[in-house]
Image 1 (cartoon, one colour):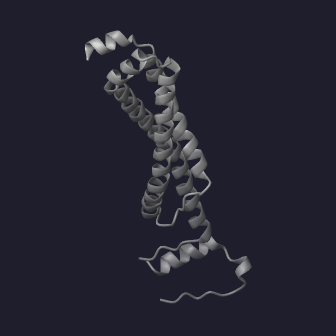
Image 2: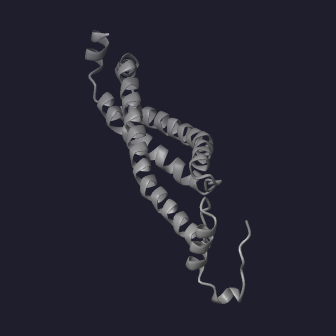
Length: 174
């Protein structure tokens, strides 16, 4: 199972040598460094192409879930909102309550997503590619900003709508 290699390596025609190796050893597949680099670049390009789509889908799904949860929270708290408005609470105080809750949920969700999601992503990526793929530590700030922003934006409209409620109608319905 040996091959005769001779001469200066700087003058070797690598593709021709690979072909000769494959001819001498029919079940063998000769790999060159250039071929491995080309394959790796293809894998990286594919990962980059799908990572953008995956990120966009994830952000849309998470934003939708947050919007539904905050809207349902407002509906469940109609009685309390009506009571606060009936006792003289400012509509902006009602908005501030929901915005504050949304910011807290955004911070907790962003931290949980970062500290639970990135290790899981690293594990899945390393199993798919076969190489370790560590997450960058500088993504924590961006993750928190994105999660708090989505939470605040999704809480703003339901909070404004709740602050405009007629307290007598709300208390009469419930």
